Length: 140
Image 1 (cartoon, helix red, strand yellow):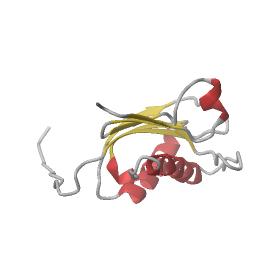
Image 2: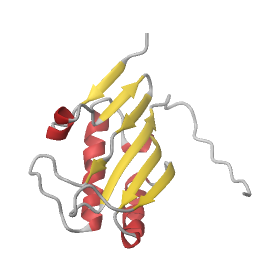
Image 3: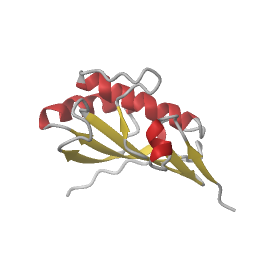
Image 4: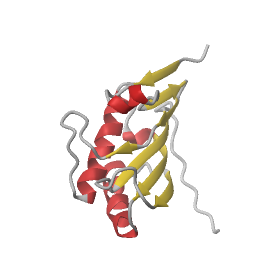
């Protein structure tokens, strides 16, 4: 039987709107959009890179609850408030997951709250560590 694990981070919105920070189904993990707010202090830096790092910290904490890491990510869904924020956020993500090279989907536009500059969601897959990563180069 396939196990489904729902991870809660303690955000009041998870209870209010009935969602989980992430859900693990067998070896697949799906996260909700995650902002760069420190969920313990409720503070959010006005700095784009700091928000991106905090969002990744929030996701990493949730992933640790199911014995996974950011390096298990196979896809990031990246939302930024303005085009000027995009390269900053991509750089932060690259620094944190260098070598795992997940697929990216990017959205640019209004955020749910004016202080938000970035939201991240991911799909991860926990694989057998004995299975090698294969990188193929193709012409598209």
